[in-house]
Image 1 (cartoon, rainbow, N blue to C red):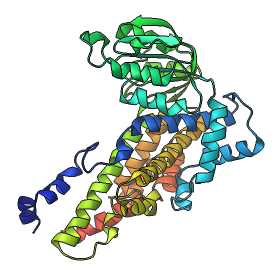
Image 2 (cartoon, rainbow, N blue to C red):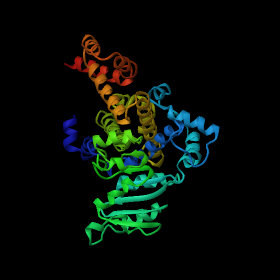
Image 3 (cartoon, helix red, strand yellow):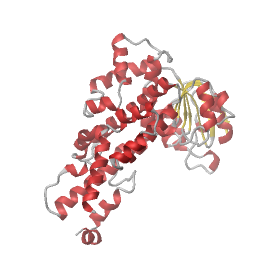
Image 4 (tube, one colour):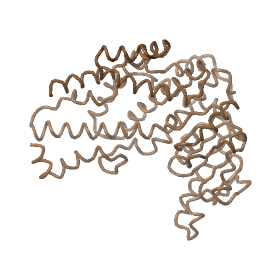
Length: 409
């Protein structure tokens, strides 16, 4: 039946192929556009929240006691809490309004920000953080760099857009054409990278791999580095930055919202295909439980509710709030574990990832084989694995899939 439909029906062919490609203008989701920069913003807000409550970040305007209590709730968001709440009301609309309209403007007003990159990610993070009153003091791209005070985000991005068709390729789509509040211009991509060493509160390498190395890491002078590009730091640079006390929100955490939004789009396409197969090919009522094996269990009901609606501005907002809660939880967990163990956030992230993969592998083994493998691990690792990873609902999904395959063989 599928083969006949696939060969004869263009609509069905598109449904089958759609899930393989993300960021599509057709059959995509609007939440995918700008998701990486939006996620960088959420990662920044979470990191600043944690640093402030640890006494390592000074607010521009004093927070009230009530606001500090709310902030403590925000840094407490993690996977166990999300599972306990069934993924619902992790941050209420009322609390998010307080955070975005009062708390984060107080924490971020006039904080100095430096951005490397004016492309999709760099421009997105500039726009996302502008609403909190940050002070953009430097930005660079392939054409060079500009330095100033309270650079106008709109003029900067307009200058980039207006110069896309210049004859001089070296100056195309560059911030170098900005004039307002600019005190210094540096031509050339290599020369412009020197802005990474400017003293600031927030540093965003959001363009090149290996932007920070052992050569310039000793000169980095920022409180937080949020990595918008992949491989922003060399391994030696990571160690140097940690020794200097710089909080590094590492690359595959900070810019992971793009991948998460692509996952949402994949779910949307799978849902569309499954529904088409049920209602058109098999002519029966669609049961959305067919999606259970694909949807992350932390937000299962919430995501199903979104999938049951057609894409719209309201649905885009719902996707973005799920993305926000994922980012806050991930940053909080790595930050807290890194602090407790005296390691970098990246080390904490690697441990988290490895234990997730290990748990997935273990539940594909027999009980005896799994117990034997677990017994070879250090006691602390065994406890962490059993408490937080082997008890995760994802394990049940994998085990059910394994049992289904056994029945089919």
